[in-house]
Image (tube, rainbow, N blue to C red; front, side, top):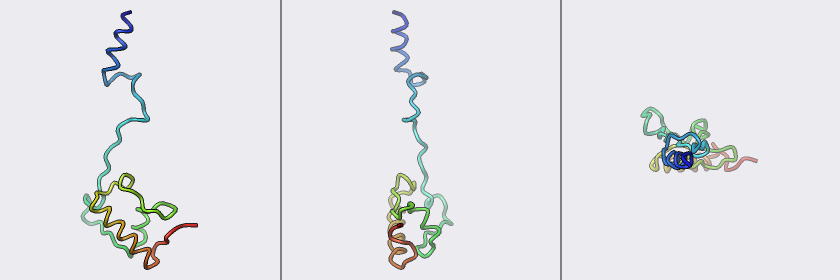
Length: 94
């Protein structure tokens, strides 16, 4: 009977090892590259920089993946669309 009470009390304790589930561990928040590094220039003519923000199928990666803030994610999207328009980046990969 005493074991049941201890288990119940331990469930409420966040440091209890049996309740730890690695699938739901807290992830480190990503920092916006453009905000943190003032020398980083986003240029639609530079395909190497643009490829960091596009997946292998040619889709624009979301903020949760790139770690960009909302302001810079809009700039990234605009730059990628401009690069596609002048054929620096393809619209899709086959």
